[in-house]
Image (cartoon, rainbow, N blue to C red; front, side, top):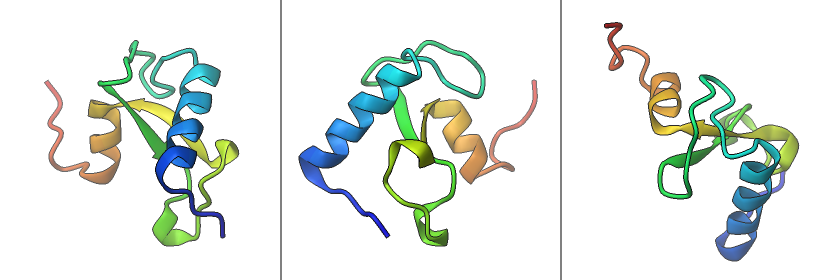
Length: 75
């Protein structure tokens, strides 16, 4: 299992954000370094690695909706 920390995790975030064109892969919203989050496709708790193939760019709303689906209520 590959786990990154510190600058290596920052580099992964830069790489993935660039690959995803600074857009949330779920809703397409434009993100910034402050509003975007690095999300794991297969969670680390389920054995997911810190690799580009297992990570994607998400906005805070989409990332939270995945982890806390009942907290996000449809309009």
